[in-house]
Image (cartoon, rainbow, N blue to C red; front, top):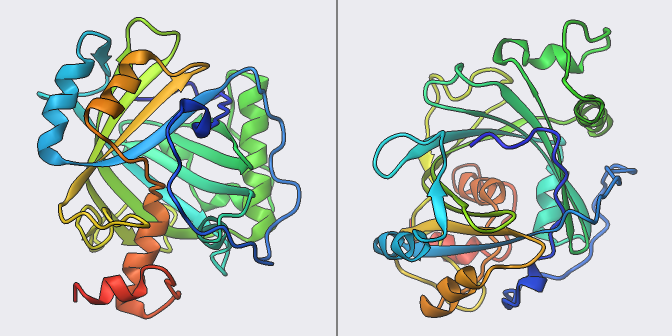
Length: 310
């Protein structure tokens, strides 16, 4: 469940041989901070593709990958799962959301993640996920749960926060710098249940199934959803719309990840199940869903479709 906090990950999904979906390719002059993270280690390539599949398909895919994968040690139950809690930060003008909406070639996300429900047992992970054209880089660091808070982004010197490696320390200050630079603050909480598997025969491969997706708008750095209202995200209204086709089921988000080369067993899953790759951003989906209740921000491609479900 908890990845190496100092890992750098580069991604080129097109290399996986799976056609990318049609989408918005506009370029717009959305204000965004200069100098996003640019330390890319291109020797570490990880390919990622996402699919929204019917719930009844999960068991079949699980059987297909069983000879090649083992379950994540952090999961519990049968099948083993865990709860992922993500706090999304954004600028006052939702610059990071709009950078995704308009498919800008140079963009990044700021997110804070912990695990479990209720929270508090696991550390807090601060993460920058940057995209430069077809390359994705993750910069990650972790701090004890009790040390997380708004105080990290004030003007006073940060004390009592220590890291195991110089790279993790650098990732921490990169995160702090970007938050301050764009005036980022909490915007949305995303929570979901993840079923996760790691490859047994490959250098790195991973399969995850995300379900019970829900969101909560928040302005609080430390609430983690306590006392707020959670709204569902895994429903036909938001989750299964494709750019050229709409699927009428409440789906599970499946993600395939591989290092260097996509293993043949992954390709077999995609071809046998006739899967269609989608660009699925939980944060932007939550922004669009919340716009129904607040009439802002504008949701251009989804606006008419959303109204049909009211």
